[in-house]
Amino acid sequence: MNVNRERLAASFTELCEIDSPSRKEGLLSKRLQAIFRELGAAEIVEDDSAVQTGSDCGNLIVHFDGSLDLAPIFFSCHMDTVQPAEGVKVKRIGDLFTSAGETILGSDDKSGIAACIEALQLVREGNVAHRPLELVITTCEEIGLIGAKALDPALVRSREGYALDSSGFAKVVTHAPALNRITLTVQGVAAHAGLHPEWGVNALVLAGQALAKAPNGRIDEETTANFGTIQGGAASNIVPEKVVIEAEVRSHSMEKLARVTEEISALFEQTVAAWSDPTGSAKGTPRVEIEVRQDFAAMQLSPEMPVLRRVAAAARAIGMELTYEKAGGGSDANIFNGHGLATAIIATGMTHVHSTNEQVELQDMVDLTRLLIALMTEPSC
Image 1 (cartoon, rainbow, N blue to C red):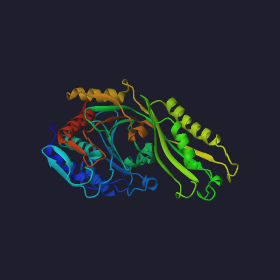
Image 2 (tube, one colour):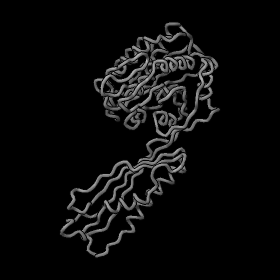
Image 3 (cartoon, helix red, strand yellow):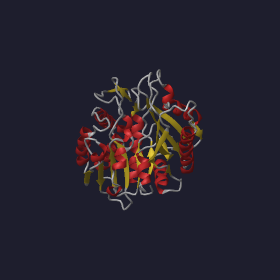
Image 4 (cartoon, rainbow, N blue to C red):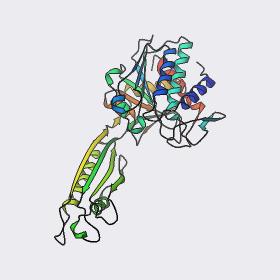
């Protein structure tokens, strides 16, 4: 089947020019539901995740019946985009798409959605036999995967699928790290910095002492740590009473994730415990509160798993050579894998994402469409 390049380009442009920043995906959702109805969807479900996410719509789970006696698979994309995302206008020079203004383009993740639409149009037009399919299109991915986290996995009939959401092309992501978020609250004692500084306990100084000793940056090839924000203090003439630090640890190893998280926690506890009052005048003692939240589990797919064997066979069927990589960030695929839905990530061709320099080539979206059709239709896949 020959991909209709100009139809794909027009579909991609239309999707990008429907504003859908996180929590404002409603207009795009309505348009997608209309498109999927035209493409013969057997069922379109909009879930009730908006109650949890605060979006103006829910996730979409779209079912397409198949005529091949093969296990169903799903393709997943997300509707939302990062800011600046209002008033997007697409600029096309040859086959290169960029933003015409000071906004992002939206190829993250509308390049994936456009390829799904074109693939479905082609198999429908050609009356081509295909396996049962589902589209799982989430909200609020860009602000912490919260649409996927709010999705009831029982709504998804397929046990395996592919998240179309990575930069680069002809790339399959098989591993992604787990992430712990850490909130460190150092509580000191306020005092007037000029009149009675000895009455106070400086929370900012204690936090700085702990930060100077804490693991940070690249820990090893599997693990990173970062201290991202620090807030505290009221004025230069007040001994700072409270400091709140937001940090994270990521690792492909759950053991290393736990160990580095514990090391950071222990250093803050030890620093606060080691505080001394040289004058004996302080009006209290410091303490630290530590909250650790696992944001998502690690994604780890082995080559012998059907979800990877299938995409490899599909690529061979169309003469595409794939590379396989580990990622440093998380995606909806982490959440799906955590629910027992084996999910690999397929790159869509988008580059310079999360910036106003974002771009994508039409040929990459064409080739992605060809790969999706092979996954849908090849009995050996």
